[in-house]
Length: 530
Image (cartoon, rainbow, N blue to C red; front, top):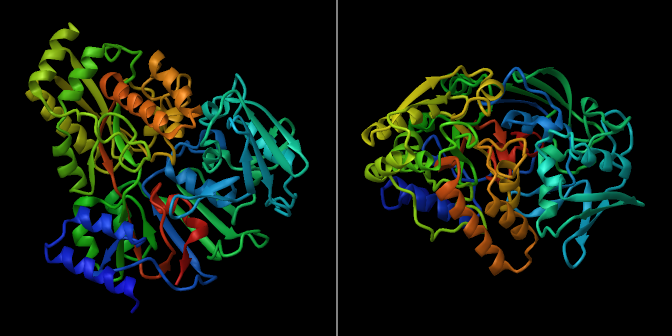
């Protein structure tokens, strides 16, 4: 037993004896670079064994809808992201420790003002259809998200691009203004690289990823075989993988316990302790940018009323929801998306807290009277979303605000409810940089701007912060952005949640990324059968 493993076991012993809180345990484990797992009563560090090739891996996720496609412009949920990362590569990617590393781009550099970025492309990469990747394929894949008519979720990022051109085996991307973090964007599944076709791309043919999609039941089941010509060493270990959607939490957990699947995400937290005592089951947990929200469409009545939005922010008891929905596996939010895992998180700004008197004050100022407000929710948004809405309803009632909780069906929630109904439950997996998170979810015209947010001061700061190379000034700008969203925005963010997944002892992995669930959504090529 090496020194790290000894210390890991000591940490678990301290937590089990009540001498250390779960929060301290997670923090100290993360500092050591350990995977945080408790299974069958024993600490399970990140698998140290050499990855083994072969076998059949079975995964289940609490995401997916029958309306899902693999069009990279319309990747909405975690299931789609996992599939996209399996079949296609991106120019850059994040390693388990959050460092940006090369993938289809081997290196990159920028002009001093961060307006012109040059990416050197990897040689000899073959797509699933047998075509060798060229600079033209990369340019077509990036241009797929550009243009006035584009409805891609990647459009806000690409709106700043004025030109993309090839220079031998490199591409040169010119921006309208500097962006110090620009290469981070090309880690996102949206910017997967596919073969060029006609005036677009052939995403149906697959990209150059470690797995070839052999069978697809959209939003329900995906079956893969390992790509025999995969360019990346030490990746894509299993011979075949079965990935399915099981949105019901109890059914998903039962599938793991009974051996139908090898790993599940979105473990139901209220049964976590019981599940951790199941022989052969390992629970692993980490903190990242995942947050749960109640977005209000700010251009639709009654949520176009700023005083109503303020009233609702003081009418929610965040700590009560964290305690009863997350069972301590997370922290309270402050009505903006820049949580503790972000570099420019402003921990010093005042917390919006439950205050029925303030809620009543702002409700009176709204001039709306005793209006009934509908809140649509479903556990398709996240496990416990419906219960969180009911808790919100109860705390708001004490403030004199009437919330009607509308129980929506799981299937079709993301296509028929989210961004269709004025107020709903939602979640954001988050992004590696502040700019990507804010540009994707709050920039005017962004495909996923689920609050219809368009605020002049915010818009100006977003552009300035993106181009600012002075760290101190940039931090001040992002602090101001967080205050604007807290005070005026249409998103109620009650909590940041830890990512929690459960696996059996037949599956292994290396160090884990917590930037998103399922190892940064790259589980297909990073995990293996023991």
